Image (cartoon, rainbow, N blue to C red; front, side, top):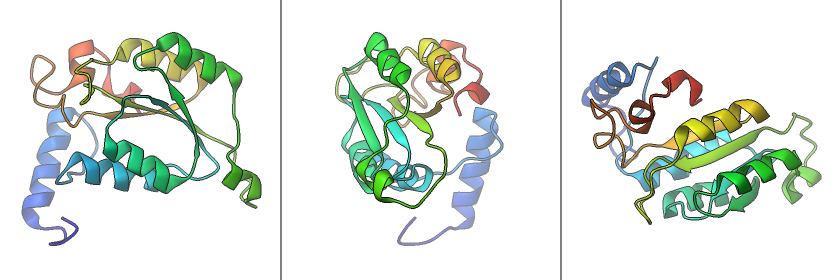
Length: 168
């Protein structure tokens, strides 16, 4: 897509994906690496805090390096460790300390629905509860789980019985 630009087939695919997922819109990338390394820097600023599972794939790691936010790594699948980091509250990154940007720090949880490196399925219900309890945003990478999880292949949110509107 970066090479050819946006075409009618792209727009048609994205409209179909949005309909399948029950969302307002969707965007399609050619590969998970391109998605994560493009989306994360667009969403996350250097003044934000990111909490991420230690086993995420290379594309997410690349996206995190590009956004330069304060990143806290938690052990793979460890919900207790995730909550402990959330409890501590905001911790500004060095770039945030040096920045004149006075926006309030946001917290993002970055999770793979189905971990590429281990095959482990994220405990989405519990993660969404923590996200809501601590006012964080959740970025759920469904690049492997879409088409494989859920009764209709809609991904982990469908398989876990979590309303997709709670994932954002």
